[in-house]
Image (cartoon, one colour):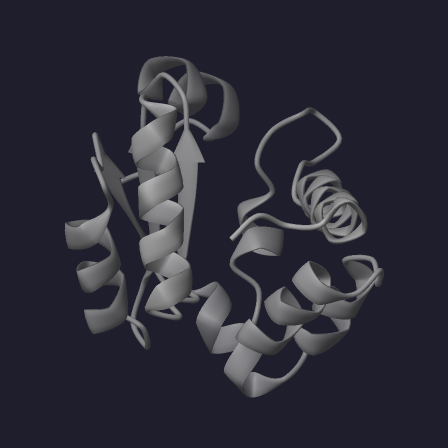
Length: 142
């Protein structure tokens, strides 16, 4: 159903805070922040804590091993079903980014992510050429 006015405002506020916390000083996606440990990611989504909690968590051996995971990329993710399945299969070994141009599909992909509780995937909407050029450092994708 529809979100009530106060609940909707709270969701929008959390989404804006999450976006601010995951964009670096140059306006690029801060992949290390986005793909921090699951516990730190969950706290940045649900509370007003800053990303400094992520950096504190990254000193643990588990968090350090998570930082070394490869990031796999799906361009033209459609409704996200395949990308989410792959992310779930790789949940301990890799992170995923799924790019989709059409925002109705971005929404569906995001919903698949939430419903399947996939924590190692980022759904990104927009033109892949512009997103990749602006947000990913040269030679960062293999």
